[in-house]
Image 1 (cartoon, protein in one colour):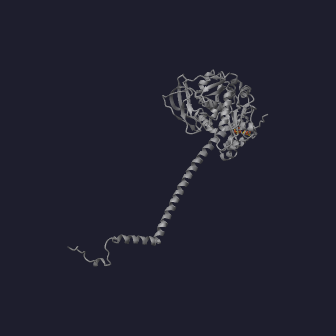
Image 2: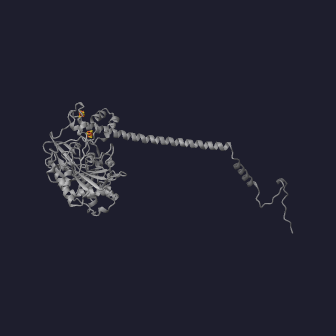
Image 3: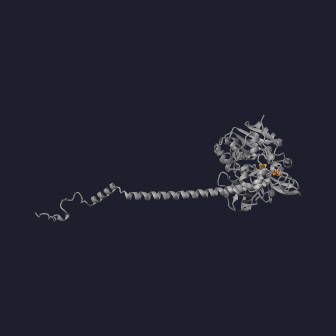
Length: 523
Ligand code: SF4
Ligand code: SF4
């Protein structure tokens, strides 16, 4: 019997999962145009390695980053690069950034996939390299480089956790993945365990996903996966949060400002594990993922195996288009997703759900009232924070106090917002305060570097001044107390230079008394 642990707070929410989970998984057609923003994750920009007019193949690298945090981006179908230009990012800021646009040719040309049946023999570093080159990032929404996450450095790791606890309402892409590709997920788990050198894997699935649990258990029994435990966890939001799932499955707490590796655990989304298997086992880069398209504003909700770079408008079209009541377009779930201004934006690797809400389906922004200090937000917070306090300090721009109240630990789950009877948009305040803290930290780092440079310059000047003073002192001392031996030596050398050569005749007579030179006698 597996012992589960509880985390503080959390919410039981209406799931709304049946809308999309009842339809079978479908494969989305190749869209006429694919768009790849070069900024795939906040602050991480890749550089294009193709030019306008190039013909690219499916799976070809089209952009590369400048370090392990920034894996390459691959074309998800063949076609011509028609533009590399600023396009809006799928981000609430509405900012634009460079994107590669590919007009697809309908051929879907790709090199033959490279079979790697012997991946069990590859060393962890080689596996990490393959994972990086395949462009794999966390598919749970964070889009963190998987190669980096599977390299915990000096921290000892004993457990791999696979996150299949899809806790946000509406989203069913992980459920669909587990039902349709359980073997890929378990093989991916095996590869990740080899990379990490761990013997234990816990795969957490919410108890409202019975078909996924059945598919996983059957696959586990049929194969050699005895060191992977399939564990059902209660459907309580946000049990799919990394820290909450670690707490539920192991009872361990990730320390404040720490990462799961500090608790001896590495956590990966089940979609990431399947992508790792496809990359390592079949040589396929990350060019597609399952995306849920759902909500009352969509005619035919469902899950689609979709190419990365597909415009949201195309995916909505494949789903029958908007229904008459469509109101809001959200990328992600209703709790942590972001409202989008347009469906012309493309799907990036982190995109798990397109939610189009119908009128009155989700609560939009309401008039905020004063805080009544009811404490409901603190009761709901899964991190055990004091949202009310954080709100006061964020609002008053007292970032130091907000920091002391562990603002950085807030996972922006929205539980506090959801329960607040005064409809205060708490998470908005926390996001703004966090951004300001990051900006201030950046300024501090810049100022620290400037100060260090100034101090180093001052120290160098001081040192040079000191050296000059010491040299001057040495010279002065030398002049004041001449070294007689040196002077004597110099005099002796001067005398020696004036002395006639030893072979010449010598005389004691003074030079003016020397006899005149004798003529040789004539015989
Ligand atoms: S739930 Fe809202 S009203 Fe209640 S204490 Fe928290 S912020 Fe104030
Ligand atoms: S958004 Fe932050 S403060 Fe609010 S409940 Fe979630 S973790 Fe706690």
